[in-house]
Image (cartoon, rainbow, N blue to C red):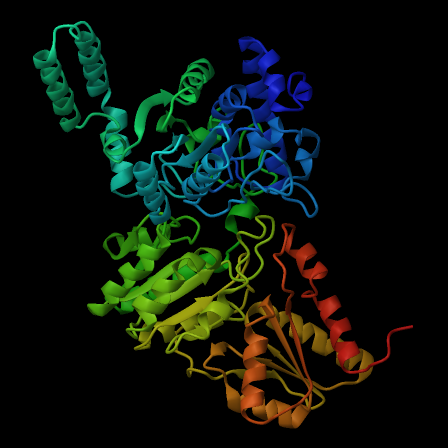
Length: 629
């Protein structure tokens, strides 16, 4: 890495020749490939922004000028150029570099972004602060075509067009988010790409009109009218210009020379400017160019030469696979069932459902709020929508769940993938707050399965309920249990005893059941305790009879959940006991009141006390049992 090893800060790029910059781009791609193959991470998006990032850092003076990355998973090149080259091998590892921009990690990172659509609003706020404080620095927001249709991004563009601050928006158009970009905005950008005739026509007319500027008002009036007519023909950027942003482009996002010249000119402009840059995800790595979705975040240990992904990594069934397989089975029996997702067809494995029922699936793009209310409207007209999204992304649609689904008592099933810790993606992606923000909503049934068969039964339950429901399940592989041939719904609000006992009760929710059983076996083996283990199944409504019976029989209760302790399942159990006037000793085991960093699931569960070893120690101390010698 001859050139990359000389780059310790963005200013070092100014000393490189054009040929050296080409070598640097190749070295950066090789470094990203090697690191992602070892650590996993986001590959296609980062390979696609190498030249764009180099051009930005050659022209703008970071950290004096602020560069913001929407979603943030395309920031690897930025990290390599801003003093983090020697730490890059720690990417996404516990204690290492984050896979997203992180202000505490570098002065070049100005905003912690892991959710789409935030860059324009944050950039607008920074521009307002700069102007009030008399600053002169530039603010650049890089936003993808998949993020742009997000409601928050649209609200920000409306505000930008109104106040017209000195702000640069770089539209990174690669036609892909996690899934292929959908919607009218994507179609509009596609028309811009196809509209080179209009671009040439407009440039020609403008050059011609420059020759007539001295003729007088009549000709200038004609000139203005002609330019407006060209806009009306569907010229590139007319939408953005009508919204108050100066539009430039589209430009080749891999032509470093052109990009550098464009940004130099844009840097001197006043007011809001949108620079439309067209890039190719996976650029420079043929397998990723050919299938950027498969290489969006490929399994680790893929071959950096051939791109071959280990067969085992591709074939292990996940909870997402089990969810989609069950949804297909339910939809075959009930024509009212439809699937709704927000740009997560691949992430939630709904491509299989799409292949089976293409007319009964709706991908609304990166618009979680719209997805939930869209489902509510469908349910109001007799359909049974299953909304599939990650737990962390449902946080964006809390009001819609409350106002549009629960208030109207509509039978929408909200299925939350990635419930619990998700590992290396870190605090923006851990799904550890959903019990707390869902269980207090009137009429909402809140479920969490301990295995894939329980999940299938919960989905069958949701399909038959005449009220809203949620089901959260974890990231990763299924438990491998046998599936019932016939999907029978669960009795709502009823848990189950999995292991009998009388000295202590371990009450778990979700996939913490395996941990509870392991701890119970060890307590009996090492201390002679007969431990009851119960699978609660429902966070709401709670099985209050079961909880009261366990309290009376066992005297002590331990709750287990992969969720924040505050407001979660354990809190619900304490409320239940207090409401019944019961006061047994209760130990609530969950996640502390902090944002959990990135790291492997094993490391995080050990560090935060959710693995069997630390849970055993907490329970042993709670019961006053002697420590091992």
